[in-house]
Length: 140
Image (tube, rainbow, N blue to C red; front, side, top):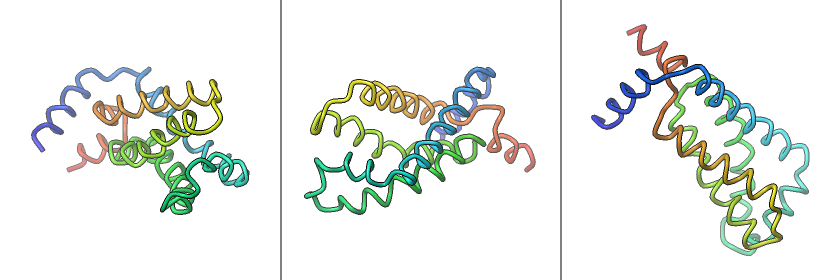
């Protein structure tokens, strides 16, 4: 708990609008990817071909879409950002691995790695000063 408080204090002291815009952009991107996966379920099933025989393959398909929807919205508003990002990490690690296990798509690989690095950054940084989390803490 002390570590999270110290991270929040550091993040609030070093918050800039470009970082908030980056957080909002990440959330919008994840939400749009959730819409993309929902509207094109065949593409999502095709992506999961390399792991379809593993236990939990179908569970993973049903985890991706809601995690992107809910996580994207939470990240945009800066509400429970760290928890939303932690929920995204298995999906993004899987996205990177799928590019190595299945057909290599360089653009998807670079996009997955970029979003994974952004999520790792926001896992430590948090939601920042201009977020619902900060607003709710100030209301107490």
